[in-house]
Amino acid sequence: MRLIQDLRIAIEHQQFNLVYQPIVHLQSGKVHKAEALLRWHHPERGYISPTEFIPVAEDTGLIMEIGSWVFEHAARQCRDWHHEFGTTIQLSVNKSPVQFRDEGENFERWVALLEELELTHGGICIEITEGLLLDASSGVAEKLLTYRDAGIQVSLDDFGTGYSSLAYLKKFDIDYLKIDQSFTRNLENDASDRTLCEAIIVMAQKLGMKVIAEGVETAKQQEILKAMGCDYAQGYLYSAPVSREEFETRFLKGD
Ligand code: G
Ligand code: G
Ligand code: MN
Ligand code: NA
Image (cartoon, rainbow, N blue to C red; front, side, top):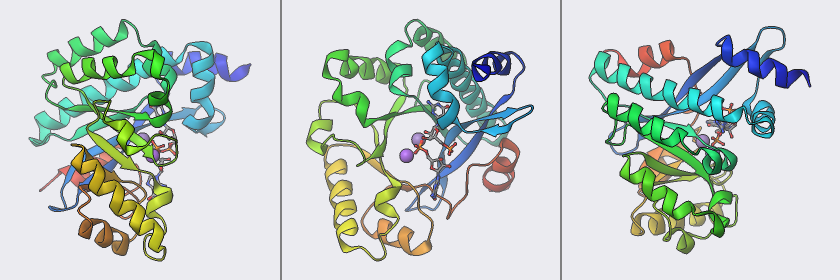
């Protein structure tokens, strides 16, 4: 298939880049974190979504190289921003279950890079999904502990769309729970979504996690989440994912 061939070329020819979406600390209104999202600009087809090419990359094993590129690029960006602006923006990178399971010896390389860049105090976070946790046999809990030891934090992405319960999460070393945007979307009008969000926030915090609400688009949603004690919010209200340059101008310069 053409896409496979093109993906190989994309790595060599640096057709990938990362965009960054700010994650806002609700009490202070400050940007403490950002999610790094992969973009591929194909020379002929233009922009191709990761939802289209990540599965292909997984099937062919190219995901290892792409995943390494994402991790290293994010780590260097985090360090560069720290040097240039004096603030640490924790960057989170997404990891599909296949990536998490198969990373093998790449992990040691990444840890060495984090040490070299002095980012072993939570400069980088990985986002995993619930599906990964349900596979009890795969040693996920143990592996998450090795992340903790390396100073990499862990977010559970898209929470509420899978099958894991909050009680189940106790078994895993997870720092942040990201409430899926399907729950924040109707917060203003749907009383049961409000109840769900509030219950998730209270229980997650009691279990020692911080909560990030995704898909926050209106000031009213922000207000409701803040009143519920939600820690962080992410969404179009603050910004869509933007380029490095735009992120610097809007969120790092002159504050
Ligand atoms: O922002 P966007 O619409 O491109 O994100 C689409 C999907 O692609 C999201 O589910 C996001 O988690 C996923 N995605 C974005 N970047 C990466 C990446 O670097 N690795 C993996 N595995 N998934 C990514
Ligand atoms: O699956 P994951 O949560 O990693 O991907 C986040 C996806 O949600 C990306 O595609 C990102 O562009 C998109 N997104 C981010 N903020 C908003 C928002 O406020 N509203 C909607 N509809 N999508 C958003
Ligand atoms: Mn994510
Ligand atoms: Na999500």
